[in-house]
Amino acid sequence: MPNPPATNAIQIRHATADDVEMIFQLLQPYVEAQILLKRDRDDIFQHLQEFLVAERQQQLIGAVCTHIYSKHLAEIRSLAVASSAQQCGVGRELVAACEAQMRILGIEQLFALTYVTDFFLRQGYRIVSKESLPHKIWTVCVHCPHFSNCDEVAVEKAL
Ligand SMILES: CC(C)(COP(=O)(O)OP(=O)(O)OC[C@H]1O[C@@H](n2cnc3c(N)ncnc32)[C@H](O)[C@@H]1OP(=O)(O)O)[C@@H](O)C(=O)NCCC(=O)NCCS
Image (cartoon, rainbow, N blue to C red; front, side):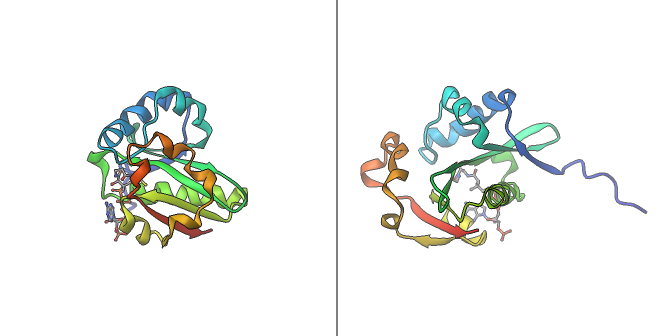
């Protein structure tokens, strides 16, 4: 007998203006927990083309943003999966979608600053020293409460 349609299938797609409020709501608990950098609605709108979202049964359950610095380097930012949807492969699919998107654009490396190092190591990233990253990546970090004492780990993957 053929398999029934996968009603729980995860769809990854580009974000639209209609997603901004849900992206904001998704990020907010992690911003408040100081795991993710603060992003207000205007900031999400201004970077909307950088965002991918994950949907399951018409519900937005994850988001991620990729910011390009140069041909050599782009950053994974604002990666978040709703607590109710974690450990189901959504984060992995979002990261894989960012990588595919960056490969198409000819970007050579992706990096992230993160507290979930093991999650990234499982996706083939390696730990690198923060000093190896170009200075321009720190411009958004001045808004981070941990800026003067950054305890995130830098991870990087060649695409
Ligand atoms: C980190 C996060 C995005 C992971 O999303 P997720 O959908 O739960 O992860 P997945 O189910 O795709 O997990 C993929 C793999 O990583 C592992 N993993 C998931 N979260 C992990 C964590 N916090 N630490 C270590 N490993 C983790 C899973 O067990 C799975 O392992 P497997 O390949 O052996 O099966 C999610 O927990 C989250 O939104 N956290 C809060 C925000 C955050 O920390 N974002 C990262 C900012 S850089």
